[in-house]
Length: 110
Image (cartoon, rainbow, N blue to C red):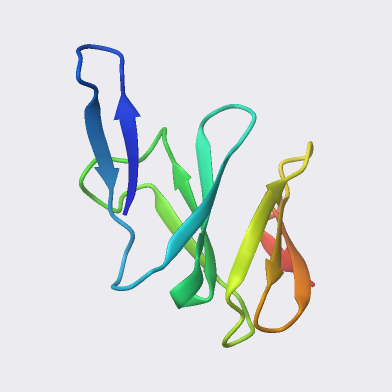
């Protein structure tokens, strides 16, 4: 799951959880886009990168979450970086590879 702290109303802050589909996802390396609407993450155990759309997400559910499975089995993606064009760059630790997810057209590029 992905959790965030909501400081807007009261103290102590409220913990808000979003559920990642499946078991043992290995979520880490969170990156927030420049508009603060998308949270990108690695689902290491699923060989995927994922996106949480905060405008569509519903706390306690997986609504608004999309996983993008990498074509390489055993890729173990990590090290997410977001560029100024909204593309998500990552490495595949298990394959010594780097890749890019082109956000505007929704494709993985080797």
